[in-house]
Length: 146
Image (cartoon, rainbow, N blue to C red; front, side, top):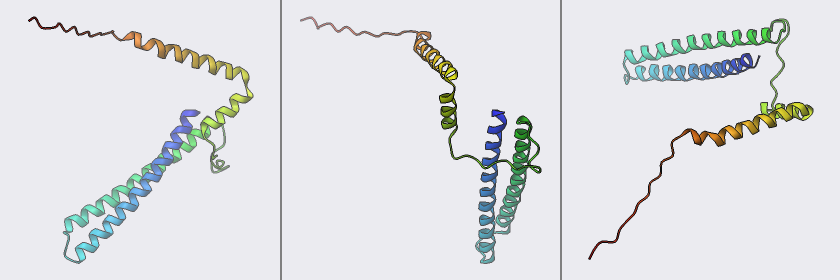
């Protein structure tokens, strides 16, 4: 379920980025058209701008489709009916860490398991340097003979 949630979050970000890309491409297309109208740009540049706008529209449609798929994948993972029957609740302003902290505060057994996990991670981190070879360098300087 976590994978489906994060896939949806990524799809949402992709839609936002695709919308911004489309807006940028439309501005470039308008600018190219205006410059062409003044004789300061070529028809090739105008066509390239139109092509970029069309590509941005296509990318937005692809991102919308991926977002739609991610929503339904998350709903299926949660064993909920599709969004047409019941919309998803609004997103919480709380971070995942805050939600986990609250949950761990209500479950001392899980808190103990997390402490064991952190202790094990600390032992692994302490043992990690032992995997590398040790190199030492010493310099001895003799006084010159007279």
